[in-house]
Amino acid sequence: MAMSRAAAAVRQRRRVPLLPAARSMASWFGHVEPAPKDPILGVTEAFLADPSPDKVNVGVGAYRDDAGKPVVLECVREAERRIAGSTNMEYLPMGGSVKMIEESLKLAYGEDSEFIKDKRIAAVQALSGTGACRLFADFQKRFLPDSHIYIPTPTWSNHHNIWRDAQVPQSAFAYYHPESRGLDFAGLMDDIKKAPEGSFFLLHACAHNPTGVDPSEEQWREISQQFKVKNHFPFFDMAYQGFASGDPERDAKAIRIFLEDGHQIGCAQSYAKNMGLYGQRAGCLSILCDDEIQAVAVKSQLQQIARPMYSNPPLHGALIVSTILGDPALKSLWLKEVKGMADRIIGMRKALKDSLEKLGSPLSWEHITNQIGMFCYSGMTPEQVDRLTNEFHIYMTRNGRISMAGVTTGNVAYLANAIHEVTKPN
Image (cartoon, rainbow, N blue to C red):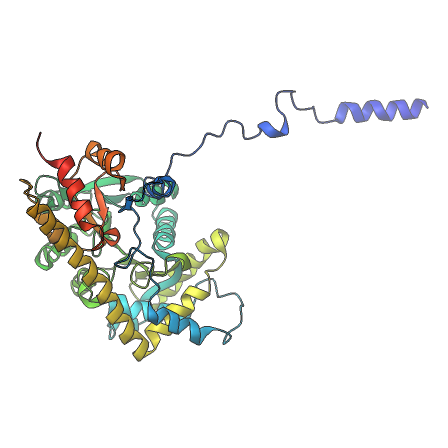
């Protein structure tokens, strides 16, 4: 009995103290506050909650047909028919689908690229463009820990989140000129010159998000030359190849200029917009290296970074992409369909501009057709956007970005009238 009491006393002394009464299991995460709403996804939530029959959503960055409905390309449907039942569901390698990567590199670097032939490109399948950017940001932090990333003002809001969470310090460089609603080329070049030698720059290859403002070919050449002078590293986010102009070769021109000028580059590719594979998360990250030996090393490190994140990328989207790009007939159909999407958006730009001018707006709306791609940076103020939402049930981000994919022949007149009402002088 005495031994039992002694043992109990020892156990009592060794026992881990009880948590304070206030620290119940439910309170472990009681200090966690709700995250702020995503500025883009929050627009869709508000739109869906609005019962108005007149509501219009021009906030979401996803293509819609002229009836405002989501689109699955016929080349994608045919690829799915071919894939169905023809493969197993085994894991892909950490680096992803070799065939998808091969086709992606040809699309970005050129069908006959010397860099592909020389095996100088380290490339992995990524979780669309977001995943490609995040892999690169983590790679940058791991192997160049003292480097910064220069990001254009403005940019897609998630770019800031990606490099922030990878703990890479960010700096801004001039890009958009609010008065002209075009490119601030002088400011951009000045910031490139002022940046410390050997800086990393995030560049939108085409269809800049959110402004739709791209440098001209000659301006890209000047930018490339200044990058050479300062030995900067260009990282291209190419989310809209083919979707911007309707021609994938034209939309890759900025990248090709930098390659011609002898730069090493990084590139994030996405098939969300140009193939409509939004939910498949199909993308590719590539980095041009000095030689094949360096490319092998870099790829191995990219795979090492991916391993604890998600182990290996998804299969189905990769099969769709490689099936389409690897078959001449399907690729031809894709080129036709992506041009059709681009042409519809270009047509809606003209229709919106024409409608505003017919209403007698005293403002210039030339920027609507001068810009390119999914988005129009309208120049409207947050207060004017709020009026569009509150008075006309039109939803967009408060920076005035209009997703042209949401504009249709059925709503363009209504949209133009509402914009005219909130922008006309009192």
